[in-house]
Image (cartoon, rainbow, N blue to C red; front, side, top):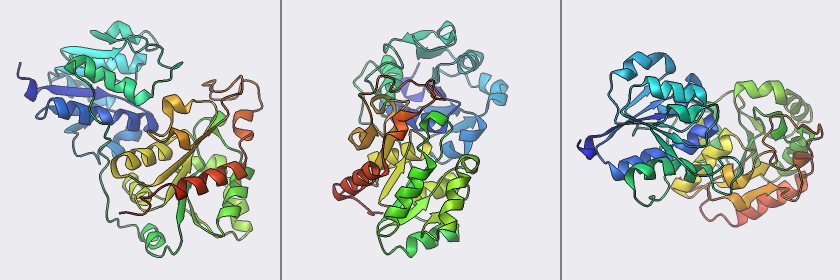
Length: 345
């Protein structure tokens, strides 16, 4: 076997934030096997995102399994660690299936190499470092510097977004108020308070997926009826347009979700923008914005903190409610003051 010509298949089907956390595997593989072929098996929601990463040779969907079986992969790396991802990994007919020893839903039964990183959820390790141990188990080498390989996007066709950036005459804040977990939601009246307060001195832009609107339509209605100066791009931007936005604003604020992790990936690779996270049911030690954990608001003293439940089992969601708009505004001001790389693209 010629190591430089090895073929890898990364299996991470969802979600978008977790796909971002898996991207550094590509750079780690390329650093150790420069001429290797790297393919990715993903769900349909992540296909468009991965298509922007030029280092990925081929992107497959689960229905492409018969094509995958013909590739004769040297290593198939299941980053997801669930029954579906592990089963698809096994069905790939790769020579070696790699996954976490302590992953869920009986998935380790499908692995040839079971990597022990301890408890995957009760940990002080960042998930990115745990993911990278799947590669170091193959290379037997120390890990390289983390890189996400997000492309620099210097131009887009969306005139509305370009106009927002071109006409910017004050520092800009990109807020992502949506999330798929109810327990991660920061109250909508808090968002209203924050946008109202900061829009006087900053350009405030809201971003998110179209599906977020069902949760935050009340916020949009209240902002519009109050004649607050802000820009609403929720459901109005593609992956490349969101990257362009993030690369041209001064700061991104969000919960433990896609936009925040994309922003921290871009900050890691380029040095900007500023990043602020609001955390409650998940721990920033494990899934916080990479290298920006000190910029997270997190009530670590609460007994029920980081419960990892999609809905608050105690029915109060105080881990998010007890983080006030004033505290978030203070963190935003502090982060902007300490971020020397704002608006460098």
